[in-house]
Every structure is written in C-alpha cells, then in structure tokens.
Length: 358
Image 1 (cartoon, rainbow, N blue to C red):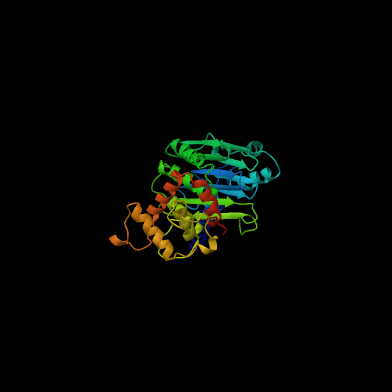
Image 2 (cartoon, one colour):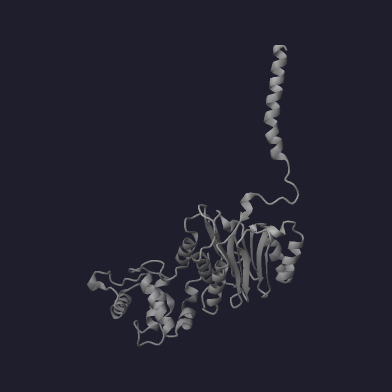
C-alpha cells in the first residue's frame, strides 16, 4: 500500500474517531427519559400558608447543592409548591398559575400529573390560600418516601431515614399554630425538627437548605412580586443550622447577638420583655413608642443586671460585663413570659420589629 494511501486512511480514521463522541453527545435523549442528574433533589420540605397574614412559604433541605434553586415556589396571595425527587421545576409556576385561576389544589395537581409520563418519579406538595391542598409521592421515588398534611401545610420527603422525619416536621409546625410567630420562623423551626430526627439518609454529600416566603400585605415586602424572605444556603456543612442563624440575624431577632450597649430593634424587644416581667419601668403600664426604646442605655443595663442577679445568673460582681444579654438569658426571658401567660400580648407588641422586608 502506498504511503499517500496510508496517510489518507489514517486521517480518515482519526476524523471518524473524533467525530463519533460528538455525534453521540448530540443524540437526543429517548422520550420519557428521566431528567438530568442536576434536577434530582431527594429531600424533605414543608409548604404552608398563614390564613391570618396571607403569607405562603416553603422550607427545604437536602444533601444536594442549591436546593433553593429548584424545589420551593411561592406566589403572594396564591399559595406554595414544593417539587422534588426527580424534580420537574415547571410544576412550580404551572401549579401556581392554576391556583391563581381558581382551580383547587387537588384538581390542579391531578391535571399536571396526568400529562407527565414520569409522574411516578415525582414528589410534589401544593397548598393554596383558599385552603385547598394536594400531595403526590410517586411509586418510583426512593424509600423512605411519604407525605403528611394539615389544614395549612403539606410536608413531604423521600430518601429519608424514616417517617419520623416528616412526622417531626408536621407536628412541630402544628404546635406553633396560633403562636403569633412569623410564618418564616415557624417553617425554619419545622425544618430543624425534621433534621434533628436524621433527615436525609445519605452521607458524604454536599448539603443545602432554603426558605422562601411571599407576603401580599401592603407593608409585607419591598419587592413588587411580594417575596419577603428568600434565604438560599447553597452549600454548608450544617445548612439548617445556618438557615436559622441567617434568619435570626437578618430579622434582628433578640438573641442573635450578645448585647452590650448597641442600638436596634432587638434592644426594644429586650425592654418589652423585661417590662412584662416587672424588671423595667415596673410602675408604668405602657412603655413609650418603640423609637424611644432602641438605645441600650444605662437604665436598661441596670434592669438587665437586676434580672440576672434575681435569677442567680452571673453578674458584674462575678466579672460578667454590665448589661450582658446572651441566648441563655433570652430563652429564660421567653420561658418566664410564657409561664406568666403573657406570650400573646408581648408577641403582638414586637411582631412588627422582627418582620423581614428585604
């Protein structure tokens, strides 16, 4: 065989070899094939509404990065959706569109599932502000998989350590009903309860968590679409704990930082709690307006020190900084307020101070 012919055959072989992988990469996936791996979100979540405030929200965590980019969907004044397992993100806007048109949640979900050849791979929870709700856990989802619901929430999960995860989420959320706490706060607490029981059954993978809440009230959100809270922990060794830390920090919830003569709404919360227990301005029935309570001044420092001494906590005489307020003291204050039957009026007074509008 001549040298030119050998070269020609060799060049042809090289071109075919280079072209073959490319051709395979361009071959379309078979009809009905499962979505790409990046849309696979085995997880547990809770979608809920607050009939009193009109808020709707979703909290979710998993051992896959960036769960907040796919699973939670909310719409102000309409409802909330969690779409997971072999996640079809289109379920979010599609189901919310149907809810907004007045279609009940069960009918909306039935329509979308009937049109989905991969419905047995899906897990979906949907709840509307009209009180309608629906859930689907396909037979092809990874065990343990299941769901549970109540009058104002849907909780669901797959590839979990067991049913105790969803049960803890549901029971914790039910337990906070009527507490006066913001929906976002209650959702994070429910997620924490599920995580504490074991959560996602996998180990050694990236982890994430997210919280998404919409508020239709005039002063509920700064964004035009009504999204009031959007916390997306895309990757963290302990994402649920980080979600709580960020929520408490952004909302300025009392206890997120030690207090030593700062100024802020958490200082006003401290005055309100101490006043309710008789340690601050005990001779006054009503406190001044909140804008006069935000400065951590000497009178409040003295009230804190009196409280700590009365309760047997460490004081300046023991080397503790004057006016020291940490999470332990905050938890004790709330426990005493609850024991005194004062939780509801106190929460009504501080509710607007801790609302997120970012």
